Image (cartoon, rainbow, N blue to C red; front, side, top):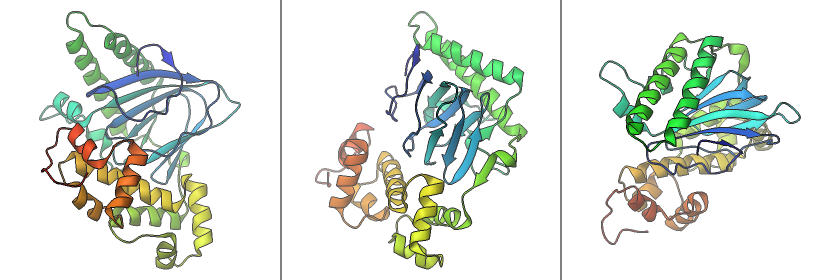
Amino acid sequence: MGGKVQSYDSRQVMCRADYEIAHKRDTYLQNVALHHHDFYEVYFLVSGDVNYVIEGRNYSVLPGNMMIVSPRELHQAHIEPDMAPYERYVLWIDPKLLERLSTESTDLTRCFDISSPGYSNLLYLSSGERSMVRSLMEEILSETENTGYGAELMQSSMLTQLMILVNRIAAKGDARSDDMTYSSRVVTDVINYVNIHYGEQLSLDDLAERFFVNKYHLSHEFNRHVGTSVYRFIQKKRLQIARQLLAQGQKPKKVCSECGFSDYTCFYRAFRSEYGIAPREFALSVNRPIQDGDTT
Protein backbone atom coordinates (compact mmCIF):
# COMPACT_ATOMS: atom_id res chain seq x y z
CA MET A 1 0.00 0.00 0.00
CA GLY A 2 1.17 3.58 -0.48
CA GLY A 3 0.20 7.25 -0.36
CA LYS A 4 -1.63 8.00 -3.62
CA VAL A 5 -5.16 6.88 -4.39
CA GLN A 6 -4.92 3.32 -5.67
CA SER A 7 -7.16 0.76 -7.33
CA TYR A 8 -7.93 -2.75 -6.12
CA ASP A 9 -4.97 -5.05 -5.59
CA SER A 10 -5.58 -8.76 -4.98
CA ARG A 11 -2.54 -8.91 -2.67
CA GLN A 12 -3.63 -9.89 0.84
CA VAL A 13 -0.23 -9.89 2.56
CA MET A 14 1.75 -6.96 3.90
CA CYS A 15 5.01 -5.87 2.31
CA ARG A 16 5.97 -4.05 5.49
CA ALA A 17 6.38 -5.84 8.81
CA ASP A 18 4.39 -3.44 10.98
CA TYR A 19 1.50 -1.78 9.14
CA GLU A 20 0.22 -0.59 5.77
CA ILE A 21 -2.42 1.95 4.88
CA ALA A 22 -4.04 2.83 1.56
CA HIS A 23 -6.69 5.08 0.05
CA LYS A 24 -8.37 3.10 -2.76
CA ARG A 25 -10.96 3.90 -5.40
CA ASP A 26 -12.48 1.67 -8.10
CA THR A 27 -15.17 2.51 -10.63
CA TYR A 28 -16.08 -1.13 -11.12
CA LEU A 29 -15.32 -3.98 -8.74
CA GLN A 30 -18.00 -6.53 -8.02
CA ASN A 31 -16.57 -9.14 -5.65
CA VAL A 32 -13.47 -9.74 -3.60
CA ALA A 33 -12.49 -13.38 -3.04
CA LEU A 34 -12.96 -14.97 0.39
CA HIS A 35 -9.72 -14.50 2.30
CA HIS A 36 -8.10 -13.93 5.67
CA HIS A 37 -5.09 -12.05 7.03
CA ASP A 38 -2.41 -12.56 9.66
CA PHE A 39 -3.07 -9.02 10.85
CA TYR A 40 -5.88 -6.70 11.95
CA GLU A 41 -7.82 -4.69 9.39
CA VAL A 42 -9.61 -1.37 9.80
CA TYR A 43 -11.76 -0.46 6.80
CA PHE A 44 -13.48 2.92 6.35
CA LEU A 45 -15.97 3.25 3.48
CA VAL A 46 -16.09 6.65 1.75
CA SER A 47 -18.50 5.85 -1.09
CA GLY A 48 -20.20 2.85 -2.63
CA ASP A 49 -22.68 0.21 -1.49
CA VAL A 50 -21.08 -2.89 0.02
CA ASN A 51 -22.24 -6.13 1.58
CA TYR A 52 -19.49 -7.54 3.79
CA VAL A 53 -19.55 -11.23 4.75
CA ILE A 54 -17.47 -12.24 7.78
CA GLU A 55 -17.66 -15.82 9.06
CA GLY A 56 -21.28 -16.12 7.93
CA ARG A 57 -22.33 -12.72 9.29
CA ASN A 58 -23.63 -10.38 6.61
CA TYR A 59 -23.23 -6.63 7.06
CA SER A 60 -24.72 -3.89 4.91
CA VAL A 61 -21.97 -1.24 4.83
CA LEU A 62 -22.76 2.35 3.88
CA PRO A 63 -20.50 5.38 3.40
CA GLY A 64 -19.18 6.59 6.74
CA ASN A 65 -19.31 3.10 8.27
CA MET A 66 -16.23 1.29 9.52
CA MET A 67 -15.44 -2.44 9.51
CA ILE A 68 -12.93 -4.11 11.84
CA VAL A 69 -11.63 -7.59 11.06
CA SER A 70 -9.54 -9.93 13.21
CA PRO A 71 -6.80 -12.24 11.87
CA ARG A 72 -8.86 -15.41 12.30
CA GLU A 73 -11.94 -14.18 10.44
CA LEU A 74 -12.58 -15.29 6.86
CA HIS A 75 -14.21 -12.42 5.00
CA GLN A 76 -15.08 -10.97 1.61
CA ALA A 77 -16.77 -7.90 0.17
CA HIS A 78 -19.57 -7.86 -2.39
CA ILE A 79 -19.76 -4.49 -4.11
CA GLU A 80 -23.02 -3.37 -5.68
CA PRO A 81 -22.42 -2.49 -9.36
CA ASP A 82 -23.64 0.69 -11.03
CA MET A 83 -23.40 2.65 -7.80
CA ALA A 84 -21.01 5.44 -6.78
CA PRO A 85 -17.28 4.71 -7.12
CA TYR A 86 -16.11 2.19 -4.52
CA GLU A 87 -13.82 4.34 -2.36
CA ARG A 88 -12.33 3.34 0.98
CA TYR A 89 -9.38 3.60 3.35
CA VAL A 90 -7.81 0.35 4.50
CA LEU A 91 -5.39 -0.04 7.41
CA TRP A 92 -3.54 -3.30 8.02
CA ILE A 93 -1.72 -3.52 11.33
CA ASP A 94 0.43 -6.30 12.75
CA PRO A 95 -0.75 -7.66 16.14
CA LYS A 96 2.72 -7.21 17.63
CA LEU A 97 2.74 -3.52 16.71
CA LEU A 98 -0.68 -2.99 18.24
CA GLU A 99 0.49 -4.71 21.42
CA ARG A 100 3.59 -2.47 21.55
CA LEU A 101 1.44 0.64 21.19
CA SER A 102 -0.83 -0.54 24.01
CA THR A 103 -0.22 0.09 27.70
CA GLU A 104 -1.12 -1.87 30.81
CA SER A 105 -4.35 0.09 31.18
CA THR A 106 -5.12 0.64 27.47
CA ASP A 107 -5.37 -2.49 25.32
CA LEU A 108 -5.66 -1.33 21.71
CA THR A 109 -6.56 -4.85 20.55
CA ARG A 110 -9.73 -4.80 22.65
CA CYS A 111 -12.01 -3.70 19.80
CA PHE A 112 -11.06 -6.88 17.88
CA ASP A 113 -12.07 -9.27 20.69
CA ILE A 114 -14.82 -11.33 19.08
CA SER A 115 -15.72 -12.86 22.47
CA SER A 116 -16.76 -9.47 23.89
CA PRO A 117 -20.50 -9.06 24.61
CA GLY A 118 -22.19 -7.15 21.80
CA TYR A 119 -19.19 -7.46 19.50
CA SER A 120 -19.79 -6.31 15.94
CA ASN A 121 -17.48 -6.00 12.95
CA LEU A 122 -19.56 -3.03 11.78
CA LEU A 123 -19.11 0.33 13.52
CA TYR A 124 -21.30 3.43 13.14
CA LEU A 125 -19.59 6.81 13.35
CA SER A 126 -20.95 10.26 14.08
CA SER A 127 -20.16 13.02 11.60
CA GLY A 128 -17.40 14.26 13.90
CA GLU A 129 -15.92 10.78 14.23
CA ARG A 130 -15.98 10.30 10.46
CA SER A 131 -14.04 13.53 10.00
CA MET A 132 -11.48 12.54 12.63
CA VAL A 133 -10.99 9.04 11.20
CA ARG A 134 -10.51 10.29 7.66
CA SER A 135 -8.18 13.08 8.78
CA LEU A 136 -6.02 10.68 10.80
CA MET A 137 -5.85 8.17 7.96
CA GLU A 138 -4.79 10.92 5.54
CA GLU A 139 -2.13 12.10 7.99
CA ILE A 140 -0.81 8.55 8.44
CA LEU A 141 -0.72 8.12 4.66
CA SER A 142 1.28 11.31 4.29
CA GLU A 143 3.65 10.51 7.14
CA THR A 144 4.25 6.98 5.84
CA GLU A 145 6.01 8.49 2.83
CA ASN A 146 8.09 10.81 5.02
CA THR A 147 11.63 9.63 5.76
CA GLY A 148 12.65 12.80 7.59
CA TYR A 149 13.32 13.52 11.23
CA GLY A 150 10.79 12.02 13.64
CA ALA A 151 8.75 10.22 10.96
CA GLU A 152 8.68 6.92 12.86
CA LEU A 153 7.47 8.59 16.06
CA MET A 154 4.84 10.57 14.17
CA GLN A 155 3.52 7.38 12.57
CA SER A 156 3.34 5.61 15.95
CA SER A 157 1.63 8.62 17.52
CA MET A 158 -1.04 8.89 14.83
CA LEU A 159 -1.63 5.13 14.71
CA THR A 160 -2.13 5.21 18.47
CA GLN A 161 -4.60 8.09 18.18
CA LEU A 162 -6.53 6.30 15.45
CA MET A 163 -6.74 3.02 17.35
CA ILE A 164 -7.84 4.79 20.54
CA LEU A 165 -10.62 6.40 18.51
CA VAL A 166 -11.61 3.07 16.93
CA ASN A 167 -11.77 1.43 20.37
CA ARG A 168 -13.90 4.24 21.77
CA ILE A 169 -16.32 3.94 18.86
CA ALA A 170 -16.48 0.15 19.28
CA ALA A 171 -17.07 0.49 23.02
CA LYS A 172 -20.26 2.48 22.37
CA GLY A 173 -21.83 -0.62 20.84
CA ASP A 174 -23.90 1.27 18.28
CA ALA A 175 -24.30 -1.62 15.81
CA ARG A 176 -27.90 -1.92 14.68
CA SER A 177 -29.31 -5.40 14.23
CA ASP A 178 -31.24 -4.45 11.09
CA ASP A 179 -27.95 -3.89 9.25
CA MET A 180 -26.55 -7.29 10.16
CA THR A 181 -28.13 -10.58 9.18
CA TYR A 182 -26.91 -14.03 10.01
CA SER A 183 -26.86 -16.76 7.44
CA SER A 184 -29.53 -19.43 7.58
CA ARG A 185 -29.46 -21.38 10.84
CA VAL A 186 -27.85 -24.43 9.28
CA VAL A 187 -25.12 -22.38 7.59
CA THR A 188 -24.29 -20.65 10.88
CA ASP A 189 -24.21 -24.01 12.66
CA VAL A 190 -21.92 -25.49 10.02
CA ILE A 191 -19.50 -22.54 10.21
CA ASN A 192 -19.36 -22.77 14.01
CA TYR A 193 -18.78 -26.52 13.78
CA VAL A 194 -15.97 -26.17 11.23
CA ASN A 195 -14.31 -23.47 13.33
CA ILE A 196 -14.04 -25.97 16.20
CA HIS A 197 -13.62 -29.30 14.38
CA TYR A 198 -11.37 -28.29 11.44
CA GLY A 199 -8.84 -30.95 12.50
CA GLU A 200 -11.34 -33.78 12.06
CA GLN A 201 -12.74 -35.57 9.02
CA LEU A 202 -15.11 -33.10 7.34
CA SER A 203 -17.03 -33.26 4.09
CA LEU A 204 -20.29 -32.02 2.66
CA ASP A 205 -21.82 -35.47 3.20
CA ASP A 206 -20.59 -35.62 6.82
CA LEU A 207 -21.94 -32.18 7.65
CA ALA A 208 -25.28 -32.77 5.93
CA GLU A 209 -25.73 -35.96 7.94
CA ARG A 210 -24.72 -34.31 11.22
CA PHE A 211 -27.14 -31.41 10.78
CA PHE A 212 -29.98 -33.48 9.28
CA VAL A 213 -30.18 -31.56 6.03
CA ASN A 214 -30.08 -32.50 2.36
CA LYS A 215 -26.53 -32.02 1.09
CA TYR A 216 -27.69 -30.24 -2.06
CA HIS A 217 -29.73 -27.80 0.01
CA LEU A 218 -26.75 -27.22 2.32
CA SER A 219 -24.45 -26.65 -0.64
CA HIS A 220 -26.85 -24.14 -2.19
CA GLU A 221 -27.47 -22.26 1.06
CA PHE A 222 -23.76 -22.15 1.90
CA ASN A 223 -22.84 -20.74 -1.49
CA ARG A 224 -25.65 -18.20 -1.30
CA HIS A 225 -24.79 -16.88 2.15
CA VAL A 226 -21.02 -17.33 2.36
CA GLY A 227 -20.07 -16.92 -1.29
CA THR A 228 -18.04 -20.10 -1.55
CA SER A 229 -18.49 -23.87 -1.34
CA VAL A 230 -18.45 -25.91 1.87
CA TYR A 231 -15.27 -27.65 0.67
CA ARG A 232 -13.50 -24.37 -0.08
CA PHE A 233 -14.48 -22.87 3.28
CA ILE A 234 -13.13 -25.91 5.14
CA GLN A 235 -9.92 -25.79 3.09
CA LYS A 236 -9.39 -22.07 3.74
CA LYS A 237 -10.09 -22.45 7.46
CA ARG A 238 -7.57 -25.30 7.73
CA LEU A 239 -4.94 -23.35 5.80
CA GLN A 240 -5.58 -20.27 7.92
CA ILE A 241 -4.96 -22.22 11.13
CA ALA A 242 -1.99 -24.02 9.58
CA ARG A 243 -0.35 -20.73 8.69
CA GLN A 244 -0.76 -19.49 12.25
CA LEU A 245 0.65 -22.69 13.75
CA LEU A 246 3.66 -22.61 11.43
CA ALA A 247 4.31 -18.99 12.41
CA GLN A 248 4.28 -20.12 16.05
CA GLY A 249 7.07 -22.61 15.34
CA GLN A 250 5.20 -25.91 15.01
CA LYS A 251 6.62 -28.46 12.57
CA PRO A 252 4.90 -28.85 9.19
CA LYS A 253 4.13 -32.55 9.70
CA LYS A 254 2.44 -31.87 13.03
CA VAL A 255 0.53 -28.93 11.56
CA CYS A 256 -0.67 -31.10 8.69
CA SER A 257 -2.10 -33.64 11.13
CA GLU A 258 -3.63 -31.10 13.52
CA CYS A 259 -5.39 -29.24 10.71
CA GLY A 260 -7.17 -32.27 9.30
CA PHE A 261 -5.33 -32.84 6.02
CA SER A 262 -5.43 -36.45 4.83
CA ASP A 263 -1.70 -36.57 4.07
CA TYR A 264 1.31 -34.29 3.78
CA THR A 265 1.25 -34.16 -0.01
CA CYS A 266 -2.29 -32.75 0.04
CA PHE A 267 -1.29 -30.23 2.69
CA TYR A 268 1.85 -29.18 0.83
CA ARG A 269 0.02 -28.66 -2.46
CA ALA A 270 -2.88 -26.78 -0.87
CA PHE A 271 -0.59 -24.52 1.15
CA ARG A 272 1.66 -23.73 -1.79
CA SER A 273 -1.34 -23.08 -4.06
CA GLU A 274 -2.93 -20.71 -1.53
CA TYR A 275 0.16 -18.80 -0.39
CA GLY A 276 2.73 -19.36 -3.15
CA ILE A 277 5.27 -20.81 -0.74
CA ALA A 278 5.98 -24.22 0.80
CA PRO A 279 5.07 -24.75 4.49
CA ARG A 280 8.69 -25.07 5.63
CA GLU A 281 9.77 -22.05 3.59
CA PHE A 282 6.97 -20.00 5.14
CA ALA A 283 7.98 -21.06 8.65
CA LEU A 284 11.58 -20.07 7.96
CA SER A 285 10.48 -16.75 6.47
CA VAL A 286 8.92 -15.71 9.77
CA ASN A 287 12.13 -16.64 11.61
CA ARG A 288 10.85 -19.66 13.45
CA PRO A 289 13.49 -22.42 13.72
CA ILE A 290 12.63 -25.88 12.37
CA GLN A 291 14.82 -28.89 13.06
CA ASP A 292 16.95 -30.18 10.19
CA GLY A 293 15.35 -33.08 8.38
CA ASP A 294 11.82 -31.90 9.00
CA THR A 295 9.44 -32.16 6.05
CA THR A 296 9.40 -29.19 3.66
